[in-house]
Image (tube, rainbow, N blue to C red; front, top):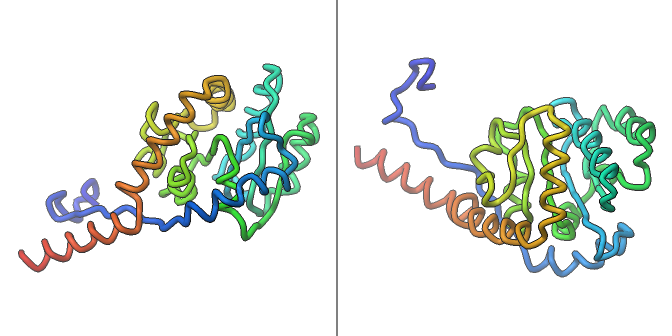
Length: 221
C-alpha cells in the first residue's frame, strides 16, 4: 500500500496471524506417531505440511533429499497434504529411488502430532503469503527451514530459529538439512528459540494484544 501510494506508513499497522497450540497434547502423541510412521528415534525425521501445488516447491525438497541421501545421511521424510501434483511427485520420488525415504501421507487430521514427532520442519514454498505451518512448527519447538521470500522471512529468524535458503535451490535446501541433522545441538537450540519467538510474536494472545492496540490508537486519534 505504501509503494502504491495508497496510504502513508504512519497509517498502517501490521498484526501477524496468531495460533493457539495445545503443545502438551501434541507432544504426548509424538512418540506413538513416530512408531506409527515406522521411524525409530535414531533416524532424523523431516516433516513438511503443504498443498501439493507448484508454488509449494515440494519438488525442490524431493531433489534436495536425493542430495542428502547421497551424502550417506539416513533420514525419513514425511509430506502431509494433498493436491493436484501428488501423482507426479510420487513418480518423481520413485524415479529418484527415494520411495523408502519419502512418504506422502495425504490429508491428515493429526497434523500437529506429526509435526511434534519431527526433528526438523521444512517449508520449501517459493510463494508463501504468510506460513501458518511454520508458526505451528516453531510453537512446537521445531527448527525450521524455509525459503527466503514472502511470509517466512517475517517468521523465521535466519540462523536463530531456523535457516532461510534461496528459492528453487535444492542444493541450498540439502545443505541446510545436512547442517541441522549433523548439528543436533544447534537444531535443538533453534527449536527452543523458535518456541519463544512463536509465543512472543505469533500466538493468539500476541495477536489479540496487537489488535487491541490498533483499536486503541484509532480511538485515540
